[in-house]
Structures are given as C-alpha cells and as structure tokens.
Amino acid sequence: MLDIINVSKSFNKGTPIQKNALIGLNLHLDKGDFVTVIGGNGAGKSTMLNAVAGVFNIDKGKIKIDGVDVTKTPEYKRAKYIGRVFQDPLKGTAGDMWIEENLAFALRRGKTRSFKWGISNKEREMFKDLLAPLDLGLEQRLSAKVKLLSGGQRQALTLLMATIKEPKLLLLDEHTAALDPKTAKKVLDLTDEIINKYHLTTMMITHNMKDAIKYGNRLVMMHNGQIIYDVSGEEKKNLEVSDLLAKFGQASGGEFANDRMMLS
Image (cartoon, rainbow, N blue to C red; front, side, top):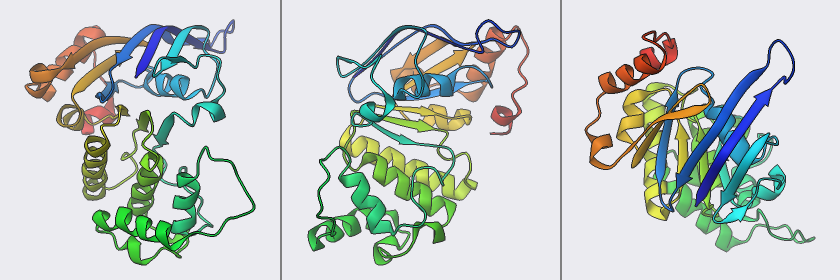
C-alpha cells in the first residue's frame, strides 16, 4: 500500500544550517499494516509523513501509494488517497462551521461540487451513528459550532473526518500529544478501533514508547533520517520500554536525552 524508495530530503541546502532530514529512506507497508513510528527529536519522523503527504518535493527517490507513483503529484491531488490527523486539534476542522457541516465536507471530499449543498436526513443519521460510539454526546449536537468543542472532542471529530472515506493511507502525526492523558487514551483506543474495523493502512508517530509497543502490528524506529529498527509480530509484542531505550542508546552513541520520550 505504501512504498518509500531511497528517499532523501534536505532543508536549507548549500547553507551552513543545511539539515539532511531524510537520507536514502526505504519503507514498505503492506495493506492493513498499522505502523507506530518513534525516534528522537529531529529523527525525520514528521518529515517522512510530510513527504508521503506531498507537503514538499523530495530531492531523490520515489513514493508509491497502492502501486501509483505519486512522487510528483501535488499535495491536493494526493488527498484522495490519504487521511491525516495532526498534533494540533484545531488543524483538522473548521471551527466556525457546525459538526455536521465538517462531516459533510469530509464525506464529499474528492466528489464533483454542485450547487446543491443541503445535508440530507440520511446523512444526518449516518453522522449520528458515527458519533454515538465516541460517548461524547456529539451526536446530539450536530448543529453546534466546532470551535465550542474541547480539544479531545475536536480531535475525535478530526479522526472521524479523516477516516470517513476509508483512505488508502492514514497518517497520524502525534495526534494525542496535545491532549491530557485520559483524553489521549480515549482517542487512541478510538483510533485503534477504527483502524481495525476498516483495516486501514496506518503510520502513527508517537513519543510515547508504551503506546508505540501497545498499538499496531509493527514498530519502526528512526534516527538521523533513516530507519534503524523495524520490528513486528511476536517480537514487537514482547518488547519492553527498556529494549527501546537500549536501541536509542546504541544509535546515539550511548547518549539519550529526549525529555519528551523519557517523560512519556
């Protein structure tokens, strides 16, 4: 479902502050893979997701989604393949629009626009059915403006919007980092439920090593723009946080000072 082939990307090329963010990166995801991605600050995690999403042009290599070469395809055209949830709960929704309007926009993504806009009763019932399992009461607030929702409610809504069309690829960029622990767990459990229900191919960046081990069928560790560890199956299930810390220690020459990951 996803092939990242020998991809390299540098920022501020030719200057004293040049940053080689990705260096000959290779990654293959089968359909239905749920991959958690961990790594220290500046390891290249978000750069990898942005490269896949088409936020910028890569310097070298190829990117394929479901066999289609999208290397030179602009971001707005890749959107038909990709669902994405960002770290900032405000990013994935339109605050001044109603809950049902946000969901309607997500439902009609990729369809030809017409003068007809009204939301049908059938669509409203579908939205209620989608929202009810969240246990947040949002199914009773379809005409509420999204900006009135809490961060957790808004992120849960964003997740539904990103997956309502069952994308070929779901990208989660630390999508629970801005939430309190209780809300983060609720959103993560919802994420896991949706991914398993629709068998979505997913990459999820996280700084929480316990979450990286608990969720998904595969774990990838990045360091200095490359993948240094790729584990799945029983080996992943049997991992401990101490194992990941040891791997980070080896990769960084014995020093590990990523406060966010240590605190997680």
